[in-house]
Amino acid sequence: MDALAEDLAALVNRESLLTEPDYLMTYECDSLSFFKQRPRAVVLPRTTEEVSRILAYLSRKGIPFTARGSGTGLSGGATPVEGGVVISLARMDRILEVHPRDRCALVQAGVVNTALSKALEPLGLHFAPDPASQPVCSLGGNVGENAGGPHCFKHGMTLNHTLGLTLVLPGGEVLHLGGPCGEPDLDLAGLVVASEGTLGIVTEIWVRLTPNPETFRTLLASFRSLEDCSRAVSRIVRAGIVPSAMEILDKKSIEIVEASVNKAGYPLEAGAVLLVELDGRPEEMERPLSAVEEACRKEGALEVEFAKDPEHRMKLWKGRKGVYGTAGRLAPDVYVMDGVVPRNRLAEALHRIQEVTDSRGLVCPNIAHAGDGNVHPTICYDGRDPEQAQKAEEAGREILRICLELGGTITGEHGVGLEKLSLMPEMFPPGSLRVMRRVKAVFDPAGLANPGKLIPLEEP
Image 1 (cartoon, rainbow, N blue to C red):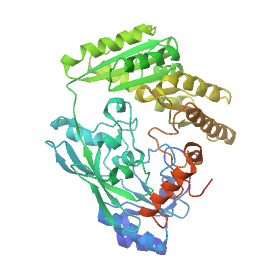
Image 2 (image 1 turned 90 degrees about the vertical axis):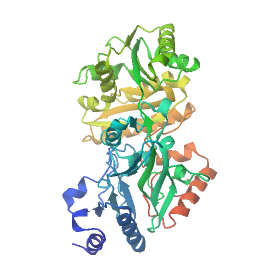
Image 3 (image 1 turned 180 degrees about the vertical axis):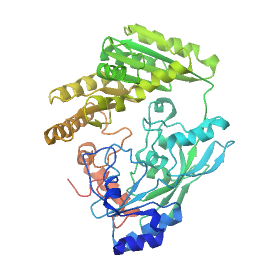
Image 4 (image 1 turned 60 degrees about the vertical axis):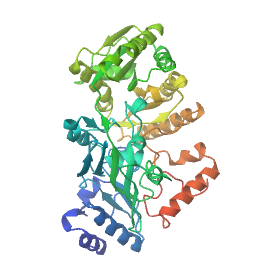
C-alpha cells in the first residue's frame, strides 16, 4: 500500500478504500465511454464528516478529486482526473428524515431515485424528477446534473425539487445551504445544482416531495411524419394544456422497441408517435384529455389510443424508457446525447440530426421530451472500431451545433462534463465564462474539485 492509500485508509477504513487495478477499472468513466482515466484510488465514505476529512487531506496534498454517484451520467462528468481520487457516495444511501406534512425529506446523496419514491409510497408522496436511469441513478447525481425526465414538463427539474443541501468544500469546510423551508435570500443551494461537482461535494439534500396523483390518463397518438407530430405538440401547448409528459419517438425508435422484449404496441407503420400523459383528479381529466385528442387529430393523427388500465400504461412507458437499452441490439456501444431546441423547431432538428448520422453511416434512433424541446439522439456505433468511434463523436459535436444554430442549448439535463466542454465558448460569451470561473474560484480556489469539467479553465 502506498502512502496515499495508507493516509486515506486512516481517514475512513480499509474496507472503504479501493486501490486494486481491477476495481479501479470500473471507475474509469461514467456511461459516456469516450473519455476514460483510471483514478489513483476510490474512497467510499458513509458520512459527511468522513467526506470532510478526505477533502481536507486531499486539499493539503494538492490532489484533485471527482465525486461519483451511480455512474449513470452521460457527459463524462464523473470521469476521474489524471492523478486524482474518486469519492464514491454510493454507500451514503440513507433516508435521514421524512416530514410528510411539510412534504420534504432529508436524504444522503447516494439514495437511489426510485428507492426514495418506493419508501414514500405508503405516505402517498414521491420525488418527481424521473430520468430514464431512475431505477439506479443517485439523488446526488440528479443534483449535480439537474436531471429531469419525461415528466419534467409539468413537474420541473431537480432544481425545482431541491430545498437545501450540505456541501463540503474542497478544503473540508461543511456548508449547510437552504433547508426544509428553502433558501430565504441568496439561493446558494440553487447555484450548486447543476454545478457537476465543480464547487465541492454534496453529501445531503433536502428534497421537495410531491403528492401522488389520484389518477393518470395516458394516450398514444401515431403520425405519418415528425412534422405532424411536432405540430401536435405545439397545438397542445397553445391550447393551455400542461400534460405531465409529452414524448416523441421517431420511426427507428418505434422499430427497435417493437423488435425487443419491451414491446409496447407502437404502430410500425407510423413515422412518429407521441406519448402524452396527464395526471390529477379524475374529475379534472376529461376536458384536457379531449383537448389533447382533438389537437392530435387536427394535425393528422393516424390513430389515438388510450391506455386501458395501469398495466397498459406501464407497457407504453416501458417501451419509451427502454429505448436506450434496446438500442444495444443495433451496435455494441450507444452514445446517448442531449440538447435543447425551441418546440417549433423540433421536427427540423430531428431531421437534421438524422442527416448528420446517416451521412456517417450511423444508426440513430431519436426521442425527445417534446414539451421542453429536449432531444436525445441515440447514436449506435462499435467502440472497438476507432473510425466508428470518431464518427460518433464528430456527429455528436455537429448535432450540438445544430441545437445552438436553431436557438437552443447544448444540454437539457445530462450536463456539460467533458463531452461539451469545448462548445461552452460557442454558447457563452467570454464575459459570462469569466464570471463562471470567478464563482468556481470562490468555492474552490485551488481548482481541485472535478477540474476540467463544465467550465473551460482558460480563455478560448
